[in-house]
Image (cartoon, rainbow, N blue to C red; front, side, top):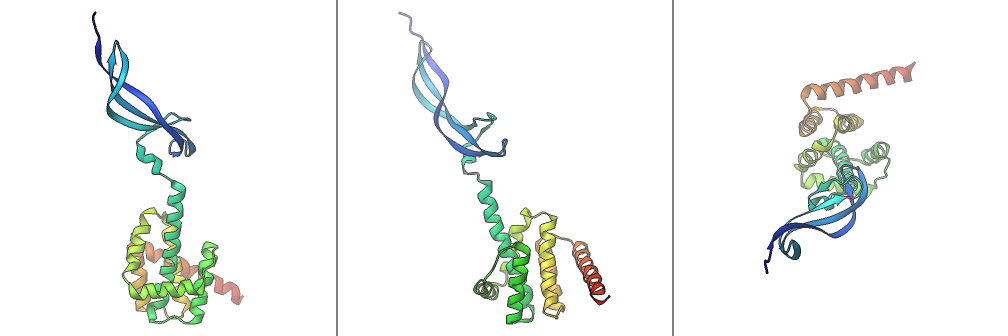
Length: 217
């Protein structure tokens, strides 16, 4: 009897579930597929020999991805980023207020009010005090925060951090050399040029001058 034996590639489904499909830009169903080299007899698969590869296949668009796509969760990434951005705003305001070495109750209240106005979230006095202690213990962490956040920020987000820092620095009535130095430090960490920084500050000054004229008229 003539026996025909050999091997062939066999694709099989070994699992399923839901994942975020980048192509569909939403949660969809997927199949987990594996490709094996299988032993055959008379071209009939008998046993899997080696795992050649595996992948995820979207059941809506049929796009295929490496297994790592199952760990991709843009909603969670956005939550993590937002938490870091919120903290960066607190850190920027606190650092600017500490430029003269102290923060009084009025400045604490201003930080809380500004934070709530910008982000629509409340922040407690204890949270700000915790931030103050963090700034004093690790003064270099401002650069670390902003350098980590900057790549994910668009121009508006970066400018907002600069504006917050400038508003706060003016609020305590002492916009001096230390405040200017910190503003430049923040701008550099956000990868903004000196010209860009000067443009933001000039625009804010013009807006405040116009507002003052309206109040006086």
